[in-house]
Length: 160
Image 1 (cartoon, rainbow, N blue to C red):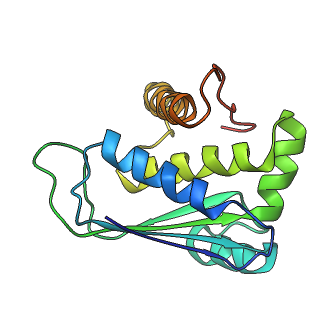
Image 2: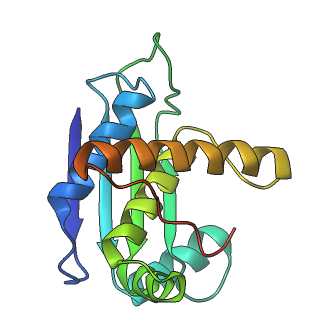
């Protein structure tokens, strides 16, 4: 799997942990090992531009996902481009402070959330939200348990 990550925000995010999380989620979701994904950390200006361009909403948001080849999880997964995830580091920092956890925890939550969107999950309806957020929590917990033995909690989203 090719995982490209750039930090244009200068927030000093631990990109190797983000890479490890991305690989973990893709492996758990049985994404083809030859799939590609791109994660980009940006400042509020570029995120606000994307937010208005693609969602017609003003201001920066925390995370946006741009699926490419509509890859889906499973044993019969195809290779291809999973897509792009864009995270606004400043919004992530604000949400982390509000939730009482670290910026890295918030980033891991947002990247997991973004990956699930790339895989076709959504949270517009209550049943979809329950499924997606439950899966998001399980993926985070299994990653944190593997990388931080003894940890039994995962960051919770600050907004739906």
